Image (tube, rainbow, N blue to C red; front, side):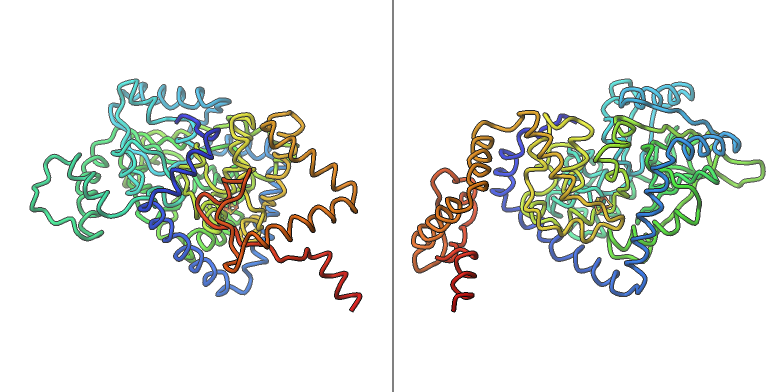
Length: 472
Ligand code: SF4
């Protein structure tokens, strides 16, 4: 996936002009947010669980090498194989080697953001192996050749009509009179196609929400059951997961699962929670003959011990983007890489470089909603601020931004001049707002007013008002 994060502003302008996308984004504003609130309110110990979840992840990250080693030992003791992949290329290559060893022609896949990160589908296709996404949203995106726009609802930017048109374009067996007017009929059509793929796939690739060191298990949650079919029907199961997914015990995984579903979709638990532990044993009625885990680093170990280590606590629930006013306005594709929203604004610069993704941590209102809902209490605004500092220190910002910040810093050290100038500016903008109290255009700051009006400020600054009231 090409990185278009440097074009965030251009991407955002297009997204704001896209009426269909704006309607689709309304589903997030009104759906996920309310569901999470109800689920969190219904569980008295929810806040305590968030503290426990944070502590589990912090403890694991502090001893990551030990838990990864323990995980490898338990997987191998149960007949599985673990491959460490330092880079995205190493990870792709490891999956390809396993597929070739088993002479695989088709691979079914259950949702895995890290496989998007390493561009697994494109690579396998180039090498003559057909990957098939089996999560409904991911399948729709695959036939559109598009990237996910949300980490748990990948096709949230699309509507029913678009999906019907795609199915009619790609599923050439479909008679015109077949009714696809309802989501259920669309689902039935996808199921017909995917059932066949499940039955004929040579290899199944899944991600993992957690890797359990004590048992060597990969835990994955879905609402469609596609991961179960992906990992149990083919002869070979490959788990592709990043290194920070490891947790010490099943008990720890259970604690994290309790905050994950509630934060993501407002469910007590996802519909399917599945554990894969090694290949099929003698006497097992089904399961794969070979079980592999590809552990992807791809820059994560470099985050350990830095300001950004806390980002590795992320359990990919999506709550931060569901509550983010910037994501609500521009959607996921605007962020220009695999991970959108506030978590992407911190993680993407860590993985692709702040020189590529510096616009993302700048596209934040710092309202703090992301941090307030994050189940593992990642201080996302603080981490975005760290990226801004880093960008400034490395002279990566545009000259105008540096000059503006320099002027502000000059004034901030001179309180009298600062008060006088902000007082004058407040009065001028308040006058310019007229009777409507809104500004439709602003010289030198047209980006603010191109898509919405700016409420005019009060004629007196807070400081001036405070002083006047105290005096009174
Ligand atoms: S940063 Fe927190 S809220 Fe956002 S996806 Fe990760 S765990 Fe969820």
